[in-house]
Image 1 (cartoon, rainbow, N blue to C red):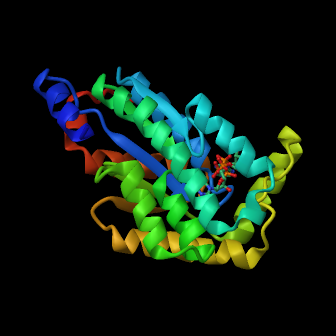
Image 2 (image 1 turned 135 degrees about the horizontal axis):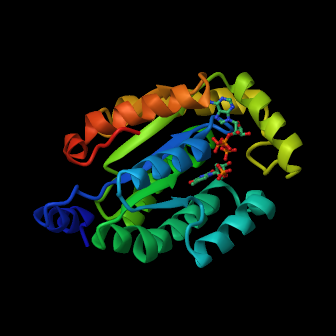
Length: 235
Ligand SMILES: Nc1ncnc2c1ncn2[C@@H]1O[C@H](COP(=O)(O)OP(=O)(O)OP(=O)(O)O)[C@@H](O)[C@H]1O
Ligand SMILES: Cc1cn([C@H]2C[C@H](O)[C@@H](COP(=O)(O)O)O2)c(=O)[nH]c1=O
């Protein structure tokens, strides 16, 4: 099913077209924080937004998440790992994302297919044709309406993650434990993805405080979806 068809139906109802927005970027740049803030802002405007994440979002995909992030799939190699992320994505798209959009809800997702390209493909060395094939399997020609890439210096992001670990006491997952060169390459690769997809991706500086980043996110969302102005009330 093409989720744009369902969007057109919702629009003919006189509402705002439901949109699929993804947040991407390196570790600890503030994606989850901004996903929460954007969903809350939309809710204040009376727009129902489903907040979700990858890998995860459905019980099956959350199972794959635990296996990948806490297990030891490295020994399988980067190709098999990419396949696991794609399997989780296929369930997530079919069981949550497409049905939510069809029901007229917005979907805001913390990471999506660009993370597979950035982590397993460009940074991890997975073959382009495998990454392309997996993307086409899980997405079937569909893509997010807007991807916000939060960009910041990986050393500063490391400091944020260290602070968060002190607060929540959770151990770092396996990608967070990679060395600084990995995180620098990752940053460059997300920027390269943005350059290749100028109509879909917007790069935002994540270095500022949370309120300032939220304002930048909102400006990008409003610019991208002018029909939102119909629903906007003072925040
Ligand atoms: N703009 C900001 N300025 C300062 N601290 C921030 C900012 N945004 C988020 N933080 C803090 O930085 C930490 C990481 O934020 P968050 O969990 O939102 O990042 P993330 O990109 O989702 O991380 P991950 O990729 O590891 O899931 C949290 O402790 C959060 O409170
Ligand atoms: C979707 C996706 C994710 N990853 C990696 C990136 C992160 O290290 C973890 C997810 O953890 P987060 O705290 O929710 O950001 O998984 C990946 O390597 N490939 C992917 O496709």
